[in-house]
Length: 180
View (cartoon, rainbow, N blue to C red):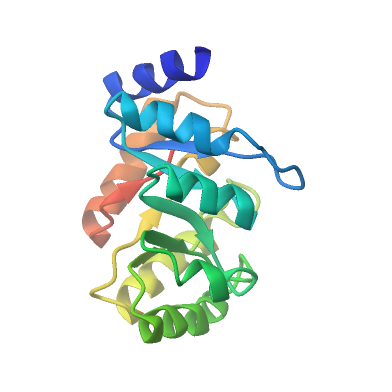
């Protein structure tokens, strides 16, 4: 029940949707049970996995958002009755997001995009540029920023970094942020 306590803490700290993360390369057989346990406590849940078995089990148990979708899983993920987060195939290429957006649109899937923010010293400025470019290319598509990518890897007071990123999100019309 430690996971429930953590999820409740995140909800009371302002989290709207609790993300159930999985370990790449492993398959978590209890992800559906944990998702259902959180849903039964009135929490909204997302699933962060490319593993089809994990994603389908979590969605069947009530997860409402799937992180993430790209060309590696778009064929089956686009058929799920949940919202998806579309990410580029190549993290440094907004162009690799374009066919994913087109395919999700054609499938009638609900989705938002995440151009992927990079840590300072590893492409941060260029990644901010991708968010500006994404807003210009797709003015009506919801965008998510995974701010945890930056705050987890920056050895500085997180409040200031979060404030700056929130300001950027406000100006670009980014209405969802992912953090840990």
